[in-house]
Image (tube, rainbow, N blue to C red; front, side):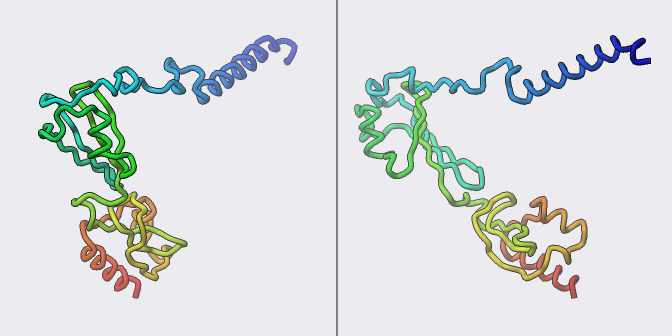
Length: 194
């Protein structure tokens, strides 16, 4: 039977090996239309930043990126103190790199100064969520997914949790808008456990 159908077996074998090879190349990114190793065009490179002078028509955006993922952006119109300064003079005076400020120049009339802060925004600063740590249920600071620190050790082993709640804790789905709500939920869990 092998001799009779060997050309079919060999064809299928070759097709299978070739498709596996293409799959491997696709997984490695060799078959993508775009080259992901190319850096994005940074507009700063296209604009001579030394020549940018701040004027009354310059839009200056100040952006704070919080650890919860939220962003607060304000549009500032240049004050008299800004007008006439070069970009670097303004940056060094009000948005120094030493304080964590970065920038993106969209155009000579639009400049974004941004900073990442390792704190939560005003909406999420009181949030708490339940998570697992070393097999125990803990209350964490911040919304689900944040890993800033432990607010409270419960002493409840994760294995004691009902199946559905255990999954929610493992998936980071038990989130509360404040610590009081989280403690109420923990109290009800402790009653359930006893």
